[in-house]
Amino acid sequence: MQEPTFLILTALAAGPQHGYGIITDVLQISGERVRLRAGTLYAALDRLQGEQLIEADHEEVVDGRARRYYRLTNEGAARLSAEAERLRRNADTASARLRHGPAFGGAS
Amino acid sequence: MSALERRYRWLLAWYPKDHRAQHEEEMLDVLLAASSPGQKRPAWRDALDVLRGGLAIRLRRIVPTASRRRWRAATDLAALLAPLTLFGVSLSQATAYAGRSAFDLALPALAHALPYGLIALLAWLGRRRAAIACAWAMAALAAGMTTAELLSLPEGTIVAGDVLQVSGRPLIAASVLLSALPACMCAAMLTLTPSPGPGPVGSRRLAAWTGGVLAARLVGILLGGAFGVVLMPAALGAVAVMALRSSVGRRTTAVLTPFLLVAVRPSWFTDVAGLTAIAVATAALLGVTAWLARTAETA
Image (tube, rainbow over all chains, first blue to last red; front, side, top):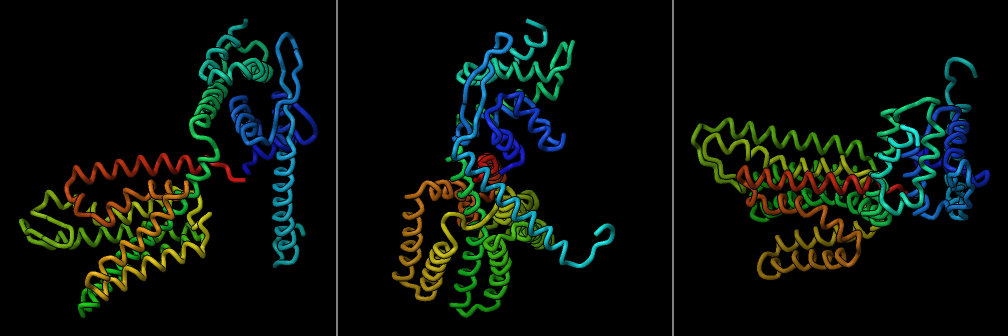
C-alpha cells in the first residue's frame, strides 16, 4: 500500500470526513510532509471506492455547495489494520536490530 | 462566479461525465478552500494535478484494477519465462551437437546457455536487480561478440550461419541488432515488470512444467526419429492448453509472443524493416503492459 493511500485511510479511521478535511488531516498526521492536491485526492478516492475500502457517508450543504463525507468500510478498516500491523512489525524489527546490533556512533 | 472558479471548472470539464455529476462541486469546494485569498488563476502544479487525476480516473474506467493485477502477474511470469526459454533453446542446441559428437560446437552452446540459466534462477529467487544486471550484460556481450565477428570478415563476404545472411557492410547493423535482440527483450521485460517470478502459478507448478518441456525437448533430440519429433510439440501443447485456459496465462502468452517469435524464428527478422517492426511492436506491447502492471496496487 502506498503512503498517500495509507494516510487517507488513516484519516478516515477516526470518522467520516469531507475532501478538504482529509487533506488537512493527512497534512497533520504526516507531520506537514504529505500535502495532497485535489486531483490526487479524488483519483485516490475514486480508486478506493472502486475497491470498496471507503464509501460515501452523508452530504452537508455549506455556502450553497454540497460537501460529501466519506467513511471507511469494514473491508477498508481490515486492510488498514493489516497494513498497520505489517509496518509495526517492520519498525519493531528495525528497532530491535539497532538495539542489539553493533553500536553506531552518536546517541544511544 | 469568480475568475478562479471559472478556470477550475474549465479544468474539471476533462473528467468523465459520471464523475463530474457526482464530484465536480465538492472538488471545486476543495480547490477553492485550498486557494489563497485574491488568487485569480490556478497554480500550475494544482492545474497539472487536476488534469493528472482526471487522466487516472479515465484510465481506471478503461482497464479495471482486477484486470491490472492479472497483467501484473502476467508480466512478472513472462519476465521469468523469457530467460528460461533462451536457456532451454541454447541447452537443446548443445544437446543436439553433443548427440552428434560435435563437442567443439556443443561447448560454446552450453556456455551460451548457462548465463540465461543464471538469469532465470536469479529472477525465480526474487533477486530482481541482479537478474536485470546480468541480462543487460548478456545483451551487450551478444552484440559485442557479433560485432567483433563481423568486423573480422573481409568486405563482401557472404555468411550463411544459423540465421545471419550478411553480404558486405549494409546488413551488419541488422545482424548485430538481431543477435542482441532476444537478450535485450529479456532484459527489458525484467526491467519493466515490478517483481519477476512465478507469481500465482507457484514455484512448484512452474518447475514441473519447465522440467517437463525441457525433458521432452532433450529426450526428443537424443532419440531422434518420429517419436522425437512429436515429443516436444506434445509437451508444449499441453502447457499451452493449460496456459490458455486461465486469464493470467492468456495475458502471459500475449506478453511473450514477440519475444518467442524472435527467439525461436530469428530468420524472419533478418532485414532492417522486419527488425524495426518487431522492435517497435515489442516496445509498445511491453510499455503498455508494464504500465498496466505497475499501476495495479497490490493488496
